[in-house]
Image (tube, rainbow over all chains, first blue to last red; front, top):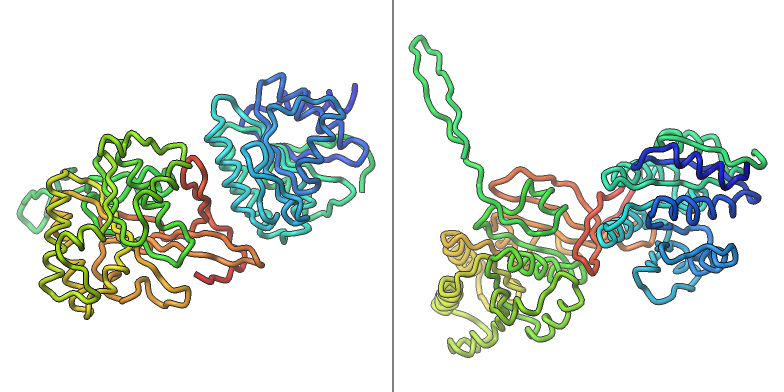
Length: 191
Length: 266
C-alpha cells in the first residue's frame, strides 16, 4: 500500500475530534499532504484549515496544484510570510499572522474560521511543529498545543500535527505523545 | 431568585429562609467575555472600559451595543471624540452589523457636542450646576427613548472639563445611580496613558464604577498582543485572568494568554 493510503486509513480509524501526531520525512511529506488535504478531506467533506509555519501559504498552494490537489476547501493561517516580508492581501483564504511566536493569534484565527465556516466539520493541519519549535521554546509550545488541541475537540475537528522525523528530539516526541490522542509514523528514514 | 430552607439549631428548632439573589445579566454578545463574566454583566451595572489607545475599547463598546440591539434592547452611543457617521462607517465592516438597526432607531448615535450646544455648555470648564444639567439631560434621553444599553466614549473627555475630583465623583455617581435605577447597563470608556499606574486618568472613576474591564497591549519578544482582563465586576463571580483578543469581521474573539514570561507595556 502507498504512504498516502496508509495515512488515510490511519485517519479513518480515528473518531472526529481526534488529534494525530504524524511523523514524516522529506520523502513522505508530499504523500502526507495529498493524503490529508486531498483524499481524506474530500472523502469526509471536510474543510482544511492549514497552519503554515515552514513554507509560505502561497508556495504550498503552488505545490498542491502541481500535485493536482483541489485547494478550494483549504484555508491558510500563515505564520511565516510576514517574517519574510512576503505577506499578500488578507482574506479568509489567507490569514496572515505577524510571527510564529504569536501562538494565541493562531488559535484565534482558527477559531474565526471554525465559527465562520461552520457548515462542515474541519481538519486542522499544523505544518510543522518543528518550525514552531524554532521560534518558540518547548514549554510555551506544549502549553499552546495542549490548549489548542483541547479547544478543537469541542468543535469536533480533526487535528494533524506534522512532525519532521529528521528534526525531532526526544523532548519533542514526548510532548506530542502527551498532547495528541494518537501518533503515526508515515515511514522513511528515522533520526 | 433561589430560596433555601435552613435549620438553625440552638436548642430551638427555628427555620429561616436564605434568599440567594441571582442578578439578571446583560449579555455582551461576545461569547467568551460572557463566559468570563459568568453569563454577562449584571444588569444596571456601570462598567469602566479602560486602556490605552489602539486596544479595542471603542470596538468592544460598539459590539456590545450592536449585539444588544440585535437582541431587542435599544442601545445608545454617546460620542465625545468621533462623529457618528465615521463610527457607523467603521461598523459596516463587521458582519454582524445591520444598518437597519440605525434606521429603525434601535441603535442610536448621539454627538455630545450637539447636547453641549443645546444646553449652552460650550465652555472649557463646568461648574457643579453644569454637571447636574448634563447628567439630567443624559438621564432624560435614556428615559424617553427606553435605552437599555449605553456607552459614553469617552468619559475621560467629559471629565477633562470638570474642575475637581469631587465634581468627577459627583458626575459618575449621579449618572450611574440614575441609569442603574432604570435598568440601563452602561459602559464608560476611559482613556489611559500607557505609563498610568491605576485604571483611570483621574483615579476617581475606577473607585465608583461597578466594574472595570482593562484592555491593554502586551509585549512578548517583540510581538504586541491585545489583551483584556476583568479586574472587578460587582454582582457576579468572574475570571480575573488575562486573555488575548482579536478583532475579526465576525466580532471580538478571545483566547487564553499563554504564560510565557511576558512583559506588559499597557
